[in-house]
Length: 337
Image (tube, rainbow, N blue to C red; front, side, top):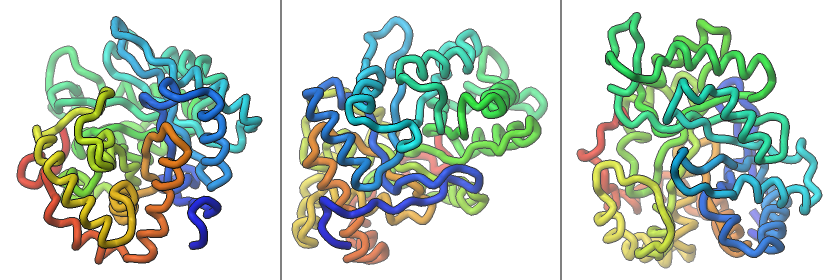
């Protein structure tokens, strides 16, 4: 594939209706606010040069908690880099904490104001942590103060119709919840969710590799693999100093224990541990894009090297080498939260 620093990241279709997105996407959680501004501009510019066109930028923070301003910084970074809006796709998060008191439109409009743009190409609905937190009265789901999926689907259809969002997906939802909201979305005139953002790595595989999601993937849903390095742990930072994602199944200690083994596999393949994890995530047939964060240009370039590793080693051979590090099998319900 040529020199890593000059390769073009290929693009894959997001779902059956979504845009073509780069097979690697750049996140912003705890990134730009830890970088020198000039370095951030250089890194984002280089990402675009490498072929990355999808940037995950969101209002990170729940009301009452300390705010993070990486989305505001991103708006300044793309201006300083001289990037036109049509040169990149922007993905935002829509949080369900406080919904429907915090309407979706208000959230997206405020998020776009902070990001310095008029629309989001993709909106990702935040976690529903428990199936009891949703309501679908016509089909007998849980009672009480829960998220009404029919109402949610209707509001998303309106946002698509207005052009405020292009398409939408979900983050760490159960297969049941995705199936339900997709039905309501179609009834509301929407194409429905095009992508599920799921934790996926050599260690966290139970959900994305399980039968419930295989059925959804076969119906056209794509995956955006996230947490592929477990907050840097699988890249060798076994004691991360920044906040990292949740630990479904309580398997993080097992993941920490797996890090040296994955590093050994990487050494055998003449690659970095980060490249092995990125390549593994890319090897899933439903993966449209692998989402990762980087705070140095060198990290970005190294992760892009996962594409060349996958081509060189092959998906089957790579996955076979990583079977021993499957940490959440039999622990996490493959149907999802």
